[in-house]
Length: 123
Image (cartoon, rainbow, N blue to C red; front, side):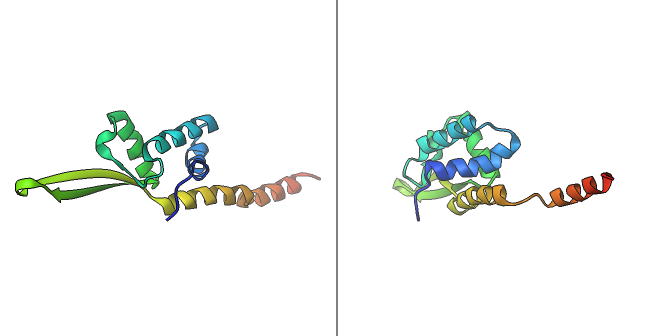
């Protein structure tokens, strides 16, 4: 599957966080923050994240952009080692970015109702 680009990530984040009042500069910074961990990879090991960074990842998981995975690997003498990692949900990122572009082109369904009401008020 393809690599998540900065532009794709910004479009998705703008659609999600921009509608909640986040300014574009902060959205770009958040995108750069994520890309600094992922780079060209599809996953990030959880143990490289600080507590506050992990909180950001959990928030992005709530919006469906990231997903946490746990894997157990057997090591010497039958012990198991848990590997926690984060991955992009690429389909959701692409949908969120495209949805934002589509939303800009769509007319507000209530706008027609308000126009009719305004027309009725005028003599």
